[in-house]
Image (cartoon, rainbow, N blue to C red):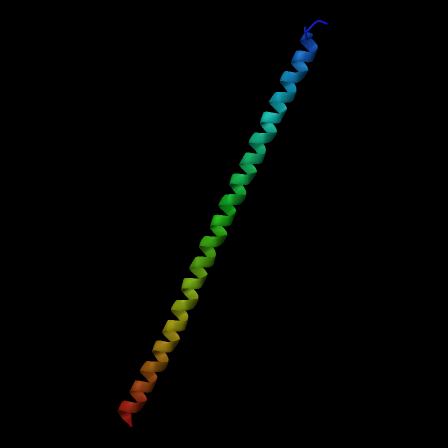
Length: 74
């Protein structure tokens, strides 16, 4: 039983490992990209929520001011 590995087998294993490392790096890049996309989506949702609350507050403020002006004139 010899434990020797031929040069072709060794080269095949090296190529396979290199391919696997490339695939792992590609998947890591995809995961980072998706993570960043999720962060951007969350930031947009936060901005939209702030905008909605600001608009609601503005509308309520206008209604209150209108009521105050109405009661002052009456």
